[in-house]
Amino acid sequence: MSNFKINWDALGIATSVACAIHCALLPLVLTSLPLFGIEIIDNLYFEITMIFMAFCIGAFSLYHGWKKHHHSVKPLVVFTIGMALLVLKQLLHQWQLFFLLPAVVFIVAAHIINYKFCRVHNHAHAEDCDH
Image (tube, rainbow, N blue to C red; front, top):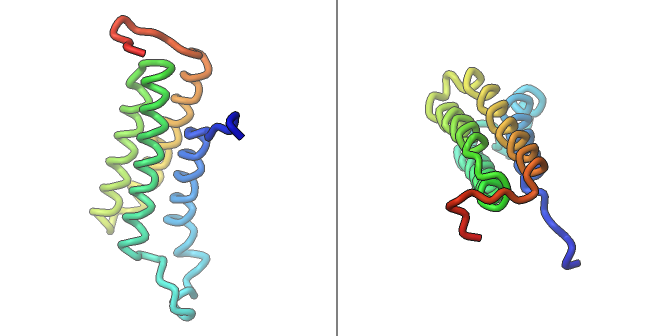
């Protein structure tokens, strides 16, 4: 069991895709949930929880890739843009579909870039590298 490792980029991509499915398809497919007393659609706490999960998993994954492998800030910048768009989606509710797709694209792209950078550089040392 000591060889078990979590692929944080894959988990980040899965979380982002789950968020996109929730935000885009759930209102269309599951509009009958309130009939059963389930309020997931436009539930502020659920939305904040999903955004927080995406941020935590993404930030950890990208920080790990930056620190231990490639030392490139590109994935972090792309992720930050995606997270900013995701927060804007929540704040500017009338424009949520306008912000959702680019947010998910940026977040998933950040994980893909990080994954590729990590595979190219098994471990890249910069001059300021202290590990």
